[in-house]
Image (cartoon, rainbow, N blue to C red; front, side, top):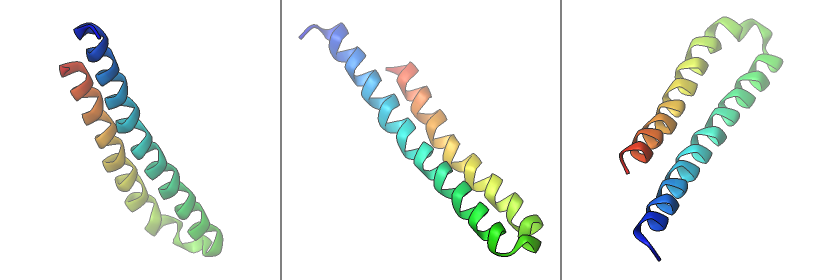
Length: 72
């Protein structure tokens, strides 16, 4: 295999793995928050900020993967 091909495969693998984990995490966070709000609608204000923070931290991992992909 040529070095350019190996480099392209490494970039593709990095962004694929680095994107699928945060996507699953954000989906799970959102689903559990909506489930919790559905069970107790009065908890909306208490859950909104922690939910957003959890999603932001999960998305930060995807951004790190994107940066590593650009560095490769």
